[in-house]
Amino acid sequence: MRRSLTRACGFAFAALALAVFAAAPATAATKPATTTTVKLSSTSLAGDGSTFQKGFNDVAIGYFKQTQKGVSISYQAVGSGQGRTDFANKVVDFAGTDAPYSSGAPADPFYYFPTVVAPITVSYNVSGVSGLKLSAETIAKIFEGQIRTWNDAAIKDENPTAKLPSTGITVVHRSDGSGTTQNFTNFLVKAAPNTWTLGTGSTVQWPASTQGANGNSGVAQLVKSTDGGIGYVDFSDAVAGDLTYASVKNASGKYVSPSTKSASAAAAGITVNPDLTYDPINATGAAAYPITAPTWLMAYVTQTDAKKGAALKAFLNFVYGTGANQGQKLAPTVDYAPLPKSLLAKAKAQVGKIVVPA
Image (cartoon, rainbow, N blue to C red; front, side, top):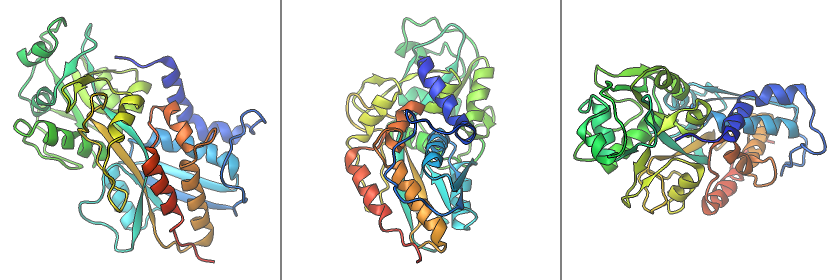
């Protein structure tokens, strides 16, 4: 199933946001609104981490720059695992992750700031085949190497009218430490516990017959260039790459296509922990897409640089803004879903707890 050209153009805009906004001043019609009314001192913020959230981060940074021209923010998509490591080592001012620390957390207190939610697609490249439906059990067997051809009986059973070829399946996965990998394998642990044997984590021991690629965009490119390829790719990159992706059977027994709407449905009934972590994977509800992932930006509770601290708080407030051209309104334009209102309120309140020196 393919998304509209509008969505693809929105993602392309996100990737170019910084360059475009730097080159052309905002007009009265396009100048974004902001909750930040005080002009910040010139400073720079460096962040890295999750590739999953890069599309959203890029467009949010680009629009924020229009409201605070003296603040420079960079974000390098190096994977959630590397982002968590860099943040713990204080290599960066903030970091993006799609999974909380399981080990190696910073010694100093820090906050998880949820930003958006989005689907992880099961994208595939099979000539003449679209609209596939796949259950967790079938996906698990494919990614473990138990199912090796596209006309396997298990795939046929779920897609009786599809003209499935005997083409061999090439599984593509992340080669770097990845929150996308952790959330995808978490889904298989939850939804196919009797089939999936590789566990869950930012890395797992994939079969030797599979192929690895760096970052979500790397997986997307390899799937698109490989006849018979299949991989797990964030929705934004799948749309930008014009990939074909499956509808996935959810906990209510419904096959649901990935979209911002089905991601919002998955996030609607989440339980939020005191530290604002939560898990929308395999959520209940007939409309919920079952492989919906969270994202967070991480920031230290006590900032050591007044200018950087003030800029970081202003950026987070911008991310949580719901006005025109603010973070939560921008999210759907680049194929992410905004936070549920209850979680958004908690996240906004947490920004105020960051301590900035005088």
